[in-house]
Image 1: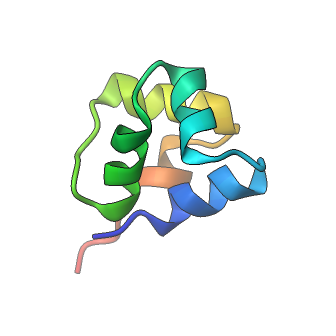
Image 2: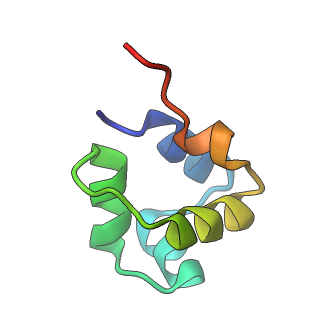
Image 3: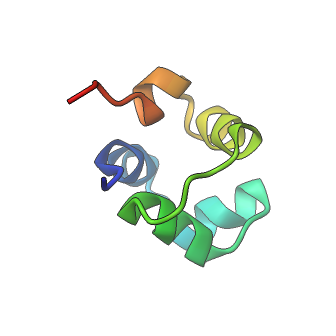
Length: 66
């Protein structure tokens, strides 16, 4: 499942995938794969993303059961 919430939060901060990746110490490809739903980040990485974007884990990563 694509992570649209992450992409929206990133663009709200006017950050490219590469800029966000640089801030948290991962590759641009990692951010791209997370946004595409093709990579499940570790909790540590999720927290780093949330801190950088000023969001909570629920804001960016919570998914309602289908």
